[in-house]
Image 1: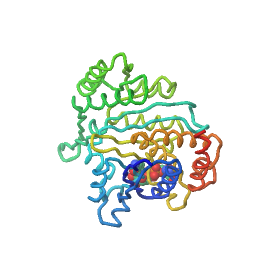
Image 2: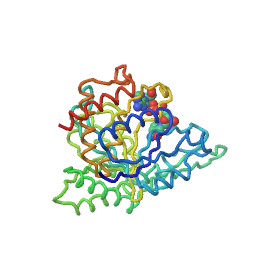
Image 3: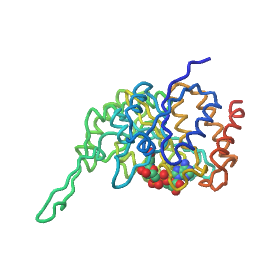
Length: 344
Ligand code: NAI
């Protein structure tokens, strides 16, 4: 028998524990050799140990290097800052990877299969902003800095090319706005072209302006394969792409750095339906599949994806968000039932 991988599980807030339970049941049924180390985070942690991101959770991720994370509630206006952002900063998770694959028969586009690689630490989201006072108005002007570094640009574009090679993808499209932002976006593009030259003959390279990309994604998503872009453009485009395949419920995410890899559902904690046992676990389950890929447990990941595809195609186990009346546990049972068929 294989030695199990130690992986941190942060079930999270709201619907988190419900979708985590379903996801773990499916991963176990698929034979994924994982030993979970359950840790606290978010409001659940705040209520239990008085802090949203306990040291014990950070130490566990430090030790295992891998975590699966449910959604975490961020109080609006007051309270603690986003735990998601804190994790990203603590572990320098510079690459946000969001694959979008059509699984739902009713999705806007069949057969979409693309990946957005988003720089996760720089750009406007670096949060360097301030007010400038004028006359009697201390907030007459607000100014924000778009931070782009050669170092950050190089490592994210290189990451995208390495990802393409590792996953058998043929094309990397760099998305920018260098026609207007000649310094910041210009640097990103310049560095990107240099990195692309290192991969010539192995992975194709294309470059596109962000607004044109948004339109082309809506018209013809099939012309894209791997998209690499800076922080804010990546944030927006990855949700747009999720819309092409049926919404955020079908989009998993991975936050990756040199020291840790954290896989997550990209939707929120859905307080409106928490505790009712009707949440759709697909996003966290797909995040679990990305985790299995990362652990080189590709066979289990492929089996789960095939069973999930079959479940959705057959209209089995649909939760209310999909127009059905099944609960989270029924959905999980429907996927587990189809695991064997998927393995044949
Ligand atoms: P949300 O994604 O939690 O909910 C939006 C709508 O989608 C709700 O009607 C909800 O019921 C539905 N929904 C979401 N996930 C679902 C699922 N798996 N199955 C069925 N229906 C689902 O977004 P909202 O309400 O804006 O945020 C709630 C909380 O989640 C906030 O505190 C927010 O900060 C946090 N959040 C956390 C994220 C994370 O940890 N990655 C990401 C987004 C929001």
